[in-house]
Image (cartoon, rainbow, N blue to C red; front, side, top):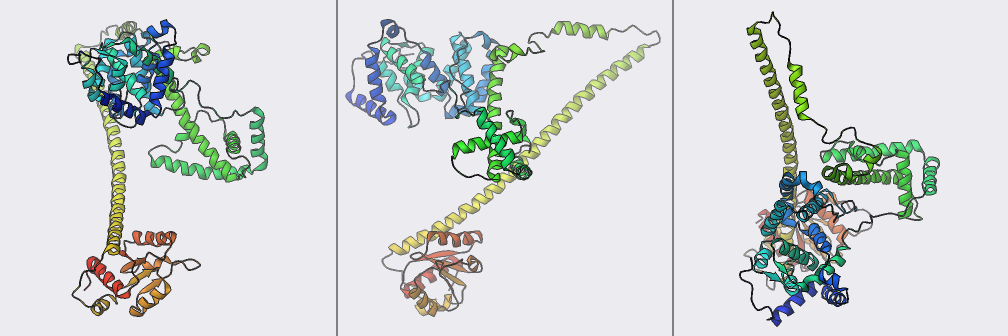
Length: 563
């Protein structure tokens, strides 16, 4: 690497520096000021810290951010390959917990990705050549542009590191890019100049902001608070009604779970924190009071918020189990203090395959039966083979049944998705239709000279007078004039006091909105009915009756072939 690097590193292009600083300011706000301040502080540090900085912050930021959006799609396959090669060796490598996957911020995918990256960084620190080669391959694949620039260098100065770390989009920070470039340079054995040491210290300082090891917490609930809420639930409310309401809410939750392909009792199974329904209501009441102090609450509130609390704790329980299991898989009993007080009945490594094989062989030895003929022995052998084959075919059938069930479920989901696509297409067509009408309306507002029609206004009036037209809105004087011309049409004043019957538009051939005099709420009230019933519609702006007739005639001619 580094065959194309410039030999004269003292030459600085002013325009390049200006562009770099401008980009840093735009991306990181006061990032440049922070960097300059930190560089000044760095000069005041003891010599041993300046000469040999800790790389922990760089490694932590790299582990936290290396999986970009493109890599996310493939990361499970990447992790599968990593664990297939390194799983047995992981407990032997360094056990540095860069990332706290129990911080309460990680959803399952992010938790798995960060935990796996933590293991990869530990493996590289422990001397794994395979993991080192894997990360280099991933860097070349998913950071192709950055790699093409990095490989030009035999060594890197701090200015060059910051330049290479310039984000390609507005979402990544300079801290992330600097950590990645420094870590990748180390893997590719590119010399990092001593003037980069302050960058490592800078990253150490910044890395403290990444999931600090203090988990989220709510104002603690004391024994008295809980007891008071529990007493209130038992004494103030009718428990029979609470249980009745809870059954209704549970039914909704169950159907919602079935809608997503889960069993109705899924939340109950997942919530390992559940201590009882009455206690749940008491805890929900406590949170409610803390969240909305002084607000009145009803039985419905207690049950509904209790059900929400139940679902939230189920979600948190799943996340806790996932974090616990990941650590237990890699580090075994040492990952938890649970087994200090509860030794497992099973001890890893106690399976003796050779001993078990010998036992099986000995049990298979039987004394020969004088009455057993050679043909009987052959018959028994054939029977054993057939039984084994039968078991194999049964397993195959079970597999096919499972595949068939999965296929049916996928077909059911596909039908639902196809129906959703049809609904979306219908909404899209309606939106296009509305857009076309609005475009026509806007065009009529900006049109200086109306096109000349061959027909006279009288001919147009006669052609459209027999149609079922509904006019919504308009000033009373204008409505009176138009109504005199078209007595069979329906005219609606949507802003009259009292309720308005929107069903009048359902049987219309065409509906026109006079937009100058109509409220937004009433407009959408009618428009929703029009959209649901697929009724043609348009807009009127002019108060000149003759122009109205021309514009209405033109729109009807274009859309329902009048004339």
